[in-house]
Image (cartoon, rainbow, N blue to C red; front, side, top):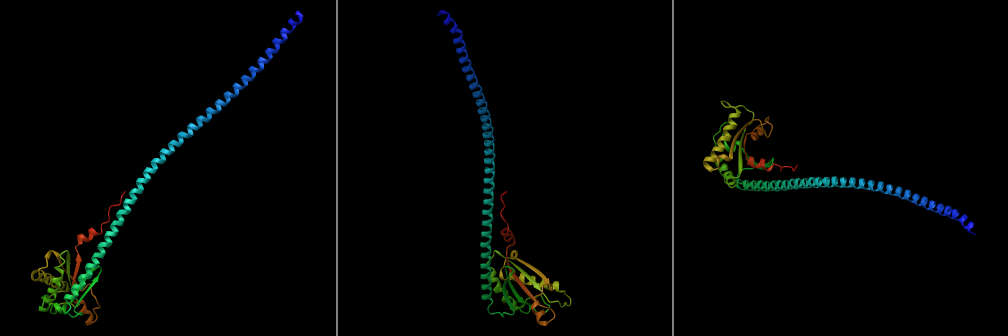
Length: 259
């Protein structure tokens, strides 16, 4: 019996050792597997960290772009608002000027109602009021001296323009193409314009700084000079009532565009 027990001891030891080795191998396999999983998780974590950093950088860039874009849009809106205000203001000024021109025409026509329409014409051309007066109503042939009837006409015009001191007055002398003896058409047209301006200033108190005298000679005809009627219509004095040029150019100045 004793001998049998002694025989079993090595067998038991071998059996226990074999079981232990299998457990160790199993544990070692599990450890290797866990290590592989840890490495995989670490790689995934690094990838996620890299991706997250890239996303954060891109989000930062997008916030900068968005801010810059918002500022650009704001500047564009401000510029559009300025342009709109300018156009609206210009439209109002043009409408106001048109209303003033209409009022001037009506007042001048009313004041000159007893004058033959063929001798005095009042109209708006090129956005300004023109009073065209036949030379036979103002001067003798070839003369720059005003007659009595001319002063009656100029007095009526002065009464109207003196109510609008913000407007300027351009007086133009015009002739036909027939040369004058002792005086060319340039001289005649200038002297006639000067006579009108001087009379408006000295006798009817139109401020001299508001007026300009100009001679156009024969070079801006209304009609063909080939007929007596055409030459008669070309011999005239134009009184042109305009806004002050500095105010006119200021009106056309556009606002600065926001950059």
